Length: 302
Image: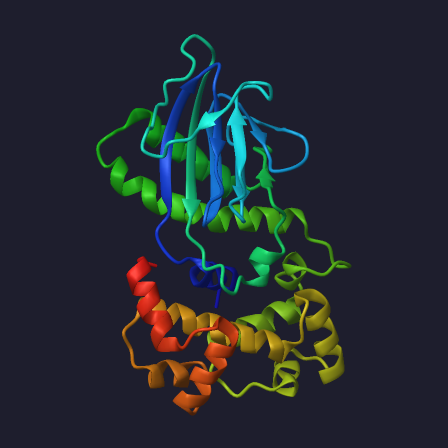
């Protein structure tokens, strides 16, 4: 079980929306608050990210940035350039005409924010992954292929680009987590690299409906119950069974959004023997009954 991939799949509530943006200086774009996570790639040229707070961030070819909470921000050829509202329906906004060219990919990932996974909650408002030679090669190779496809507009690009954009969310998250690996700090960068904690997460994600106990998990990873509970809690930020309860509800929400299976089947898959007990737990966490949540998701298209 690939825990990071499983988490991202559970967080996603719809397809990514992205636009090729070709501009020449002087140019400045304002991006309003988004319901999802906003991302930008610099495919050619350069850009300045004007974050929700703090100093502007210089970005060059191959740089990627993710704003996981979709906060309002700006992109410009220079921090002092006036901004105009970004229109996602316009690929080549009529801004400057004589300055240097920048080719960008700007978009949004739809995410379920009702119960954000700790991987998402742990992220800062701005995740910037610069094009550092020799690091995160898969991410930067993907950005390079996207740049070629979008610049050349060759036949078949419409089939090639969307799956690459989908893959970028995992690649950006993985790069950020890898850059912050530290065995003495808590957080998901540690959780996914601590052998015992990572293995226990794999077990929980592979079988969320199993009747797990802390003792079972500790035995499976070769630790005492107390040592395992301490390491898991320090890395993940909550005890093993608390995380399991959270993950069960996250899995239930994904199943309700994407499948028509009966509520009793959903309840059983995540470890509830009673549909009533499942419905009660789901409503406590989400503030809405499972059936109503499914209808709401169908209406909103997520």
